Image (cartoon, rainbow, N blue to C red; front, top):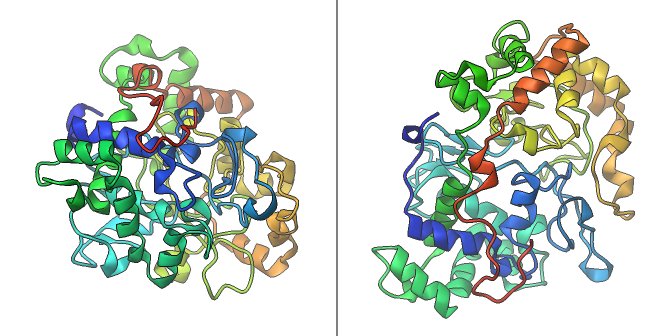
Length: 416
């Protein structure tokens, strides 16, 4: 990858987006920011299998599920993905089930959960994505009757965005920054959720652009950038192991959907009519049976930093997820629940692994496999893991352009 592969974003907008990304003003109860679940300390994730959203306290593996009336009511159904290289021009689909994509389905240019109610004017796919966690009950908006954001969403998904925009623009520092960063904004009263999302996208795209890994240097011609084990792993990745059949192209992802039989657990991303706890993956978006239990291929740069791995964070280590790809059914048979990084929430424990007791659902889950078992030696697996670690950026990771701000204009505490 080179700079030519990325969308060019305005730096003033990115600087504004940095503050918004770390500011809890964008959550219904003003108690959680984008950064809470996508923090640079955790490789732009949260180090958890399934996140603790609205109502939780703390960061990463120290995050708790809250207490009393404020405790969480549900775990986030899927793993918080890393944010690396989301400003790439070739990126056309986001979310584990692909429910957001660039498309002409609606006049706004996207196929999304907001359908025709998604506004026009987003500067990128990443900007369109940014508005959805803000209106997700268990992620950032909170529960019905707790705040005006959650109440508005109950009416219609787009009803909350104007309220959030007003929250931000009436803060004098934010209002002035929007006027300075956007040519078409002459007064704070003109700021909408679109400008907020565009600033968030600009920040994320600029802050977490990674193209300086040893692997990238090797592609540029520096044969010494990779060690012997990493070179053997590279050969396996693009050859015998078949990893590149899905992790292909500059993004190391085909942006398609595949069923690899990861151990199911958690509340699942159920649809309103699902009678049981489960996660059917892409089928939840497409309603096509052939898409059942298939999830989007993740991009792999900085994968070493973004565990746990899989759409539900089923494996804490690279070796674990590699071994699962090589033998899905065998690994599923020996997987145990203690492997999952789930903060203690006794009131949710009864459903955390209840899907394992549903023999029919587990049988359906077992029918869908897009990868065949492949026998590799322990040494070959170690080489593959070594290669995956060569995808970790250097300066892009250690010295990002903006970093974590000390304070934000709302005056709310910053997660550090």
